[in-house]
Length: 393
Image (cartoon, rainbow, N blue to C red; front, side, top):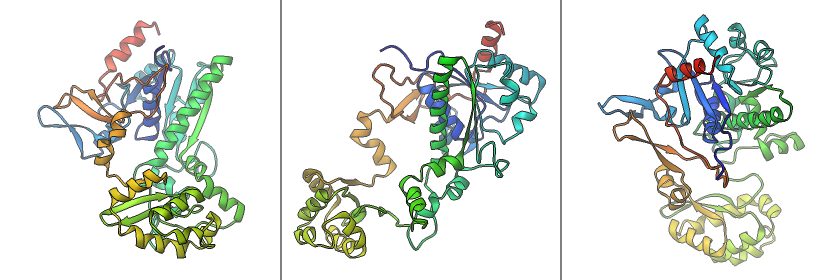
């Protein structure tokens, strides 16, 4: 083990809510020193996005689960960006920072003299990442951006939900999360470029752009055909059978990705005649005759229990599985073995610890390190400002 991958990288985090904090938590997990700047007396909006809240030793409520999900491995400092003292503090901090990340409305930091164009001459090696709803350019740049808005604007909601029902959003803030991941990737690429050239740069990441980019096969299908896809609920647009089926005691996923797996499924269900039926023997044929095949499989699957069908598919090599509740997710032996539930010491928690979701990256030489729990608002203000003064800035 050679230490953390981003050890020595310092990030000034002016973001809040989810996309920016998710990005900086990921970079913090990889070893970066993240300084989270928060508005005095207010802090990150998500601290109050509850219940549920972390319960304190006196029965008082502490941070929300929402805030806790995206803010470990950071230090929190309260600084008023719009005051002369706060402006100077930010400039002083930037003397020893590699990255600034922000998600203010377009133009807000320019008015505060903290935009990239203003800072770049003084800090030519600075990597400056801006996250917004629609980007720094274009006719919609002035619009505020939220995950739900991006899901609708970027098209995913037109694909999600029952065919006869209303468009449905993804239950978690998936566009925020994916934007945070794209931002982290861009920052890592910019750090690599700076390592070679000494040159910093601006990174412009927009929620709607990100949403559009991961329309993936459905987006390209639309570009190829000029036709909008229809909502199919839990069915796949290009593979059959690949969906949820009701069984005696709930639901099971069956995901036949090729003809061999489909034939194995037919043997499991004792309907070998469906494997040889010319309407269903190849995936293109199954797509054409989806409405005939699916009811036949559904009628048979309904006679099985979850455990029986999942076990039979596993034995035969047919991809499938349960639809776990979140409680079941975190109790699953695989999730436990992979470290997807962690606990970190937290001085404000009654139990002394806070449960969190683990990072999925497994690096052999520079493993993820859980160093700091999600900070309380302004917890490290004195430490951060004293450190800046000590460094002679």
